[in-house]
Structures are given as C-alpha cells and as structure tokens.
Image: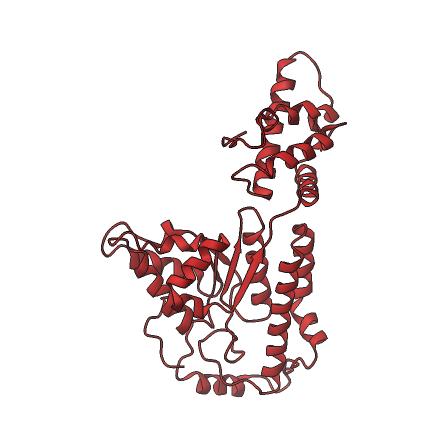
Length: 344
C-alpha cells in the first residue's frame, strides 16, 4: 500500500530498515531458543488466542441477540482462517504496520439498532477478539460521539479528530450516533471535515484501527446514502433487534441479582405488566429503560423503608422490591395511547 496521505501520531508504521533489524536480532538470538510453533489448525489458533472465552463471556453477558452473536462468530471464523492462510504463506507482506499478519480483511463495521440493545458491549468484546487474534495491537475501545470529534469554529475540528484517532490507534474506535457527523442543512457545520479525516485513516491505516459506527438503522442508512465513501469502507453491517418482554424480564432479574436485590411476591408479575405497557410507549430504550425502571423502583423502596425510621429492617427487607414499588409507576396511570413523559 502506498504511504498514507495522513498518518496519526502514535500509530505504528514498519520502518524501511525493519528487515535488517530483524536479521540482526536473528544473529543475536540464542541458537537454542525455540521457534514459536506456527498454527496449522483451527483448534491450534483457538487454543492460542482463547477467543472462545470471549464468546462465552458475551453469551453470559448479553441475553438474546442470537443473530448478532452468530455474526460475531462468523467474523471470528473469518479472522481465524485468515491467520491460517498467513501461516501457509497465502497472504502478502503486512501493509499497515499492524500485527504483521499480512493485508488484513476490511474490519470496519456498522452496528445499527435502537438504544439499549448491547451495541457497546458487543464492540468491547469485538475489540478483545481482534486483539487476541493479532489484528489490533492493544484491543482497547475508545467510544465517542460527534462532540468528541467536531469543533465549534474553523481549525478546531481537525485537532479534536486527530487526538481521538491517536487514542484509538491499535484498537477500536466506536462512534455512537455517527449520522450526527453529517448535517447538510448547516453550511457552516464542520462535521464533514471530521468525516474526511476518518475516511482517509480508515483506508490508509486500517491495519492499525477498526472503526465501528453505531446508531438507529434508518438514520444510518440515510447517512451512508449521503456519504458513499464511508459506506464503501464498512465491511460488516450488524442489526441489533429489540428485546422481547421475556428477554427484558430476564435482563431485569440479572440486573437485580448483580445489585443484591430481588423481586418479592407479586413484584415479578408487576414488573412484567410494567414491561407490557412500557414497550408500547414512545422512547423505550430496551435494557437501558429496564435499568432506569429498576432504579426508580429502588427509589420507591427506599422511600417506603425510610418512612418507618424506628423499625429494624432485616437484610431480606433491604434486598426486596415489592409489587407496590413497581405499580406506583406512572406507566400504570396512563392510557397506552398516551405519550409517556421521561422519568416515569
């Protein structure tokens, strides 16, 4: 690949003298030093990288999302086979100073779906998989929005974007609600400058950075239609479906368990009734809304216990949410056709 038109400080580029340097190392190395075994089978790559552990963690961490999890497994399979191809000499020399596996397959991605569907969590695990297989140097995730990339005046956007890219090099850059970078209705908007820098780095330094764009599906589709250069650089599109009520109920149980709370008698049914109504109201955000609902139920429980200030509450009392803590939500006071205010 030709030298990048734009390079991020802190990114890795193989120096011209690298072959001679490696030769010198070979001379200095002890003749008894064992040569690392080259993986020849899928099992050997999996044993060496331990990416199956990451996939197991993803299964434990996220309820449902089977199509997404399968797609992540498919991408992992592609990367494992690419590594075996490189071991057989079927890949050319490294092009971008990444991990030296040869020209990497395009790994930039788009995660589309409503809020609270696990996009950031999956991005974190994807970064771990890429790192363990040697496709990125560090495996860290840098999550940003438009405000982190776009400046407010002339000359402000480029430094902000470059600083973010510098932090993300060697890992994954996750841009949430990426469509806000592009605002054609505002001629004085500087988002296009950030997009142009991103495009150049996504192409020229793709061996040292993976970019994941995320947001609502319809808005991401419009964004790609308006920015074909960005669309052409995205190899993998993953759609994150909304959770069903059963899955949301299971997510609530897992959240409560992690906070050492539980539903008391009737509270589990009350929360399911809450979900049946809330999922049909506007602005529902899946797991995020479940977490907010549980926080408000805990607030009501605390108020209830606080009112009897001279009573000695047991550990069970302090850990139990009652049906009344759920049913006090304004969700039960509004017709399903009404718009639900925030914070109910």
